[in-house]
Amino acid sequence: MPYRQALIDPTTGAVMFLGTLTNAPTNQGERWWFYMLRLRVVAQQVTEVEEISYDGMLRGNSPAKLSQADRIYDAVLPDSERVSRSELAAIANKYFDVVSGTLNYHDVPWHPECSRLEDALLTVNQPESAGSCAGEFENPRMKWIVKNRRVYVTDVERGIVAAIANFTSPPEYPNNNASVVFEVFKIQDGLIRHIEAMFRGDSSMKVSTWPDLPADPH
Image 1 (cartoon, helix red, strand yellow):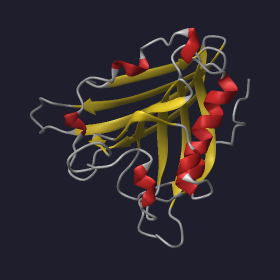
Image 2 (cartoon, rainbow, N blue to C red):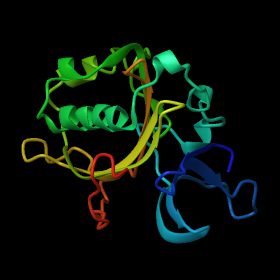
Image 3 (cartoon, rainbow, N blue to C red):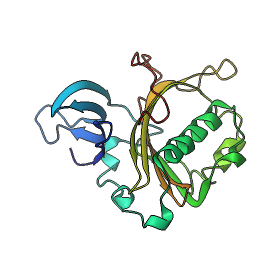
Image 4 (cartoon, rainbow, N blue to C red):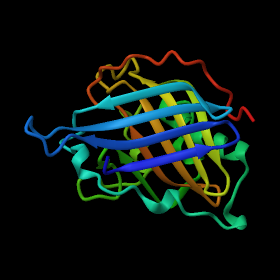
């Protein structure tokens, strides 16, 4: 498991994990997977397990491309750059509203250096993906119906929100890939600094049946 990103919320007892798996080297041939995991821990016992794996590639980017998780998620923010748990969850939901087309992207607090990683693909500020996190949404095709939003991790000290949601294809763009998405946000000074998403990139979505959660259950 060369790429590992573990996110923990001791208040809710939630753990979310984004990583890559490989069986290399074996005599059966090298294989790689994106791997997403959520746990709920109550009284030191695991009471819920939710996991997704995907052995495909997004626009030719293999899971093997990822080697080390971004240290930005480990960085503890100074008090002056922190916001409350409820504000963290509200900012993440604004992003989901923009994806759904119910909020103008100008109304989201983007950091000027915002970056976004989808599976192993950087989707902004790259020669093959020019533009910004906000600028992506100038393209009307950047739209999904975001349902079953579940915010599990809100870390005030590090400015992290980790959530899961169903991204379903809108009627006007039926070929947009639909998937259950694990989404992580780094929020600094109340601005979205970095976004990381993992999901199945082959439109083989099976809608999650876990119940919705309030934006901030605690």
